[in-house]
Length: 345
Image (cartoon, rainbow, N blue to C red; front, side, top):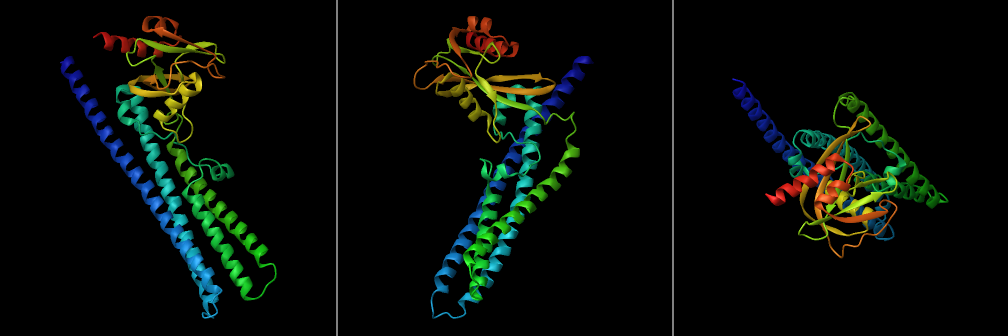
């Protein structure tokens, strides 16, 4: 009776895992389609805005079209409101994108703790599961995106409208007033975008209690073998922690696991590496916060010479037995031991 119950539970777990993998694939596909649709909308708007603005500026100076000045003003106003509608749609699209990312994160974390072997199927990963906090850094930093681009072009169009209206009434210093108009439009749109994200963060917060495993530290690294025969691997010493470990580190914002793994290996060893295959996943807690570290087997591309750096000051090429003995963390030892077992079996 007990064996029958266990088999039934295992079957249910398998069904849940299969369902979540399918769900993950569908959510990831929806996310990519949302990204593609957003880029298409913005591209269409930019082309339209550039064409109308360029054509209008050209025709304004042609005497054969006496009413073109007023027509261009009206067209620019319509274009400005169209751009604002695009901006609103892009904000909604970003909010939907964040929902996709949170859903993907939940499924990744479920498998990372319950079934680490499923991790290779879930490597579509963007480390951004929190509500957006729209700041100046988000605009001028590396995370500036399509919303910021629409805001920029819309502000330029508003400046053109100001210039045309002032020029129509022969107002002096039209250029200066137009630049002021650009800045005012940009600031107002910026405040609107930030408020929309703030409203969304209020909606999101109740759905993320501390017990929810969404707040997880994501990290990646590499088991760097001297060559593809996998006889000797590199173990590094980190001066900051005074430990012997495998090269690894946290994901940067909106960085996927595989890119982070290659970057960390390069930063901590000075060696450019390539992937061989997936090695395993190490899961543990850091001050009560779950941490997932995904490892790949790697091999050097252009030489296996360790270079001392601020992250890793020493590196040793060791065979598997000596590496297991040298490593200080049980989870990393188990991954290496599993590789050795698979190699010998």
